Image (cartoon, helix red, strand yellow):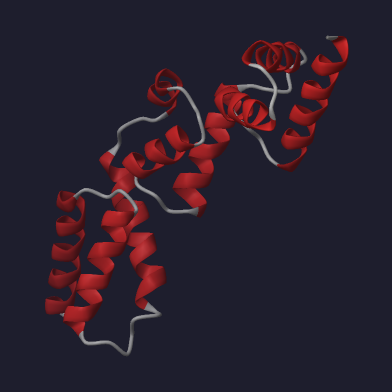
Length: 157
């Protein structure tokens, strides 16, 4: 029995060496590898006691990655963290529902993508940008507000 515990712990450490993982992710990977739930939970608890698994710290890192690197909306960041196995209660603690963050990220994303769409007709650009922002989790209200601001700026020039 001790050998199985060590093998599960070693496999979990190997997985953690690649990237940070949540408890749920590790449990799924360990059971998929063939370890029983009790052995998997033992290995996870052991690594948790050592401080190698911390869902709260991982959630902070994923939030920063989702909002700054991936330019996701807060809803998109929530979905991203749920897919990575972060519990909903931790996500609710970490994410603040600030509409300004979504607006800023949507503008930054649009600015990056407009360069790639410069040779397309404006209707195609609007449609592609709208679909991109929807896929990233932005609300239609936020997208409409940004498009209105762009239109008024274009009208002024």
